[in-house]
Image 1 (cartoon, rainbow, N blue to C red):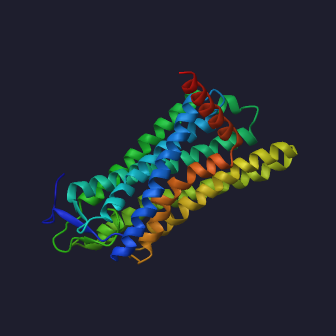
Image 2: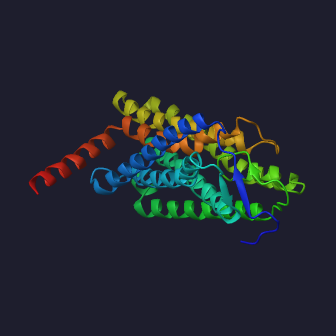
Image 3: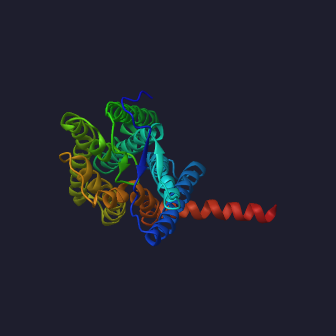
Length: 310
């Protein structure tokens, strides 16, 4: 990576400087990260192994779990290890790699959530055309486009980050590398780059949130014409999706759609969408979904029986 500066490494200040609080942070986020990986891997294995979870909704849930696991992995391990380190040093190249990974998997999560809302809209509002609209071929094309879009977005972000010159302070008041805290350290006028950041990340967050909210309003409005049982099932699924959307997009919009200023609460807010949401997604999608719970029970019952026979 080309470095347009004299800084070769950064120091991450983390969530807290207090030794006791660092130990608490270590325990809490280790539990969160292990829970995130185990929960999402459980969903991935269940969907891949189950014959009953072959619908487009579970196809997209499979990729949401992959995006969640990778998104959390781009920040959580570093945060956990740094709580045990005296000096939280990250090299320039590692920092840029983290910016790229954070935006690649974060953007992928946004696109998959949009695809899941499109799937619910087609299933509830266009039931007769649903098999044609959301065929396997179309679902694969949509996921490929989501990966391409995420790669373009993260490439744009890393290009902005690589253009920033650093020639003085190298202490990042955050637990990970991202453009907002890096802009604060750059020895140049960052007004234009911040505008590009808002027009890229900010626009994606805001427009995606509006699309999702409008789509779910349309879906909920159309449920009036369904039977009581159909309404209950659709409401259960949509409620899960809406909870995830609010938890993820609220903090994202707060961080990426404002002038170039940083607040002390930014780190806490960032925890919600980088670590909190990937941890909660498996719980939300399994505890509120009878089909996933039944498929998990069958999968693990079969494994236990086969092990006992062996």
